[in-house]
Length: 252
Image 1 (cartoon, one colour):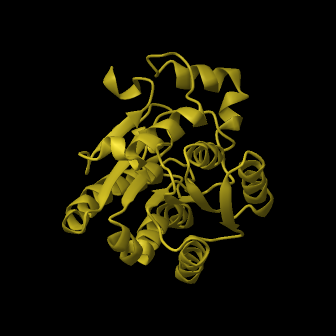
Image 2 (cartoon, helix red, strand yellow):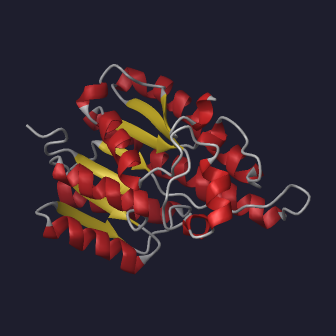
């Protein structure tokens, strides 16, 4: 028996590096995947790859999760395609960076909207389906929810991901009477499409990896593996928890 056999898993941001890794891994473990992204080409590439490997996946793109109507459309796609939603992996996010004395209100608002509000909106939308399935929520927070990183102008990012961390604990409490579990993952520095500008800059990469005990950037597949554990029955007595996938960054 595969770890997610016949589970319907809604994964957001499947056009991105971590979302694509999760879609592939979850499908390999027997899940039926519902994906989405604002990047149409990237989302379709992920869907094609999952199907080419023998998995089942439907996808909605472009999909703006800060729009409640598009959240409703994504839920409908999942239910109409597979009948239910067992797992919600709120992976999608977009951060904007600046120091406080240079940060515009629009940058602050965009980060809160695209890292926090989209988690609330989609979770609220699919909550009735999760009650029916006694489902699982996995939210992507960040090591930035736990501490500030020297050299990283991440004020809005820290605030948004800290809120995701707190939101997850509240969801765990509210979901428990319905059999819903809610946990989060806090990735550290992961080599993704969004961090390519750092990976390609030797000095910037050294600054980041100097903060990591293991001395390297994480891989999207390593985050996906953590999400798989929290989505599966192997974590059946874990809720309201945060799993740091940070190479030891937060443990100095």
